[in-house]
Length: 108
Length: 120
Image (cartoon, rainbow over all chains, first blue to last red; front, side, top):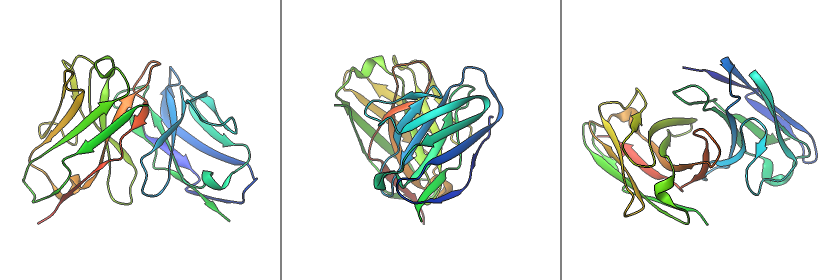
């Protein structure tokens, strides 16, 4: 199965700063079927990005996704207080679908 | 508005059984692949099972194959997960999730989750 490795494990930033989260796949995703989710404590995950770079409905444009092949990035251009959370990537390119282990974005 | 409401979570002994339900509303249920994703306490997300829109093609992760069965009743807009031979490591929040409109199994909407605790 495709292993997804997210880095860093924890990102300590201040509101207004830029966040760059990485997701690396153990093999190439030919269709770039890569999604990103945000999860706050006690809540269900929420879809942010699908198909590497398409924003889900209602997601603000400070969130953007990019990448191809094995290297993918989620960028939050300017952190808002509500953005401090755990972020997961998911590949649905090659069965079985798999998730990364998560990156926590914490307030410095 | 899409709504997914899980029920059936409980404390159960190892080796026991449990059935989760997910009542769906706000979209045409019979048109979408539906899945179960779980999250063990303090851990990440793990795909468990998925089922085609018509219900004739269930799929299970290797970790639950032979023990869990996913099914759906499109007349009742409800998704199910029958869990047998439960193990301590099955302890998790189980989320019902709706796939998206564009190709592939990404999860556009999630329920609030049902807590399953397997312990003696």
